[in-house]
Image 1 (spheres, rainbow, N blue to C red):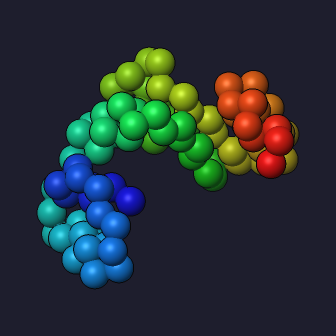
Image 2 (tube, rainbow, N blue to C red):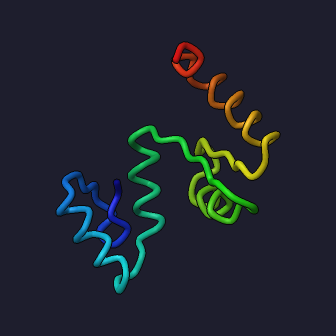
Length: 92
């Protein structure tokens, strides 16, 4: 998990709990958090109607691997796109 206030990874339950508390009142460091995840090789899937977060991500990095799932058809397209990029997904 990435703490959106510090844009740093958190791992333990106590770190996550503290990070969530800070996020209630702190400013979100969206761009820094997404940059860290992109540099780590993350792919992104936005769930639900619309693609606001995916659009924000793409405004930071047009090459970011991102999909949106809001119905069965977009789920299939996302799975196909991810499988094409990551052959290991096909084997699992």
